[in-house]
Length: 84
Image (cartoon, rainbow, N blue to C red; front, side, top):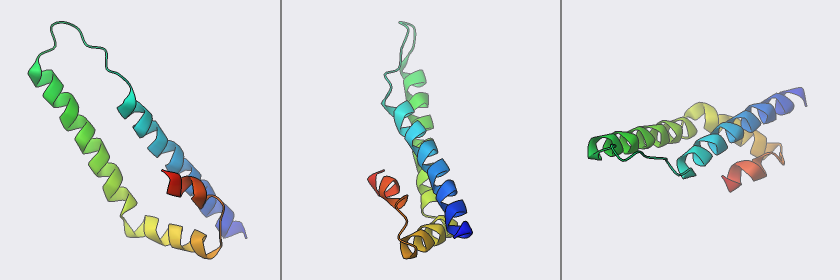
């Protein structure tokens, strides 16, 4: 149905956004010789904050409802979501 298609589009956008965050987290940072421990600590705090925000969003009731609806509709879009 039309609603299912719209929800699948939303999940595909989420999937792309999550993949982007994961790709960014896996990239090797290029550091200069003058980067000290405080800069390194700040980098990891930022990463931690990004992952926590992402996790909070995934756990939200809105996301859970959309995933439940797509599960009931047996959407194939959920396969990519589960892989993430």
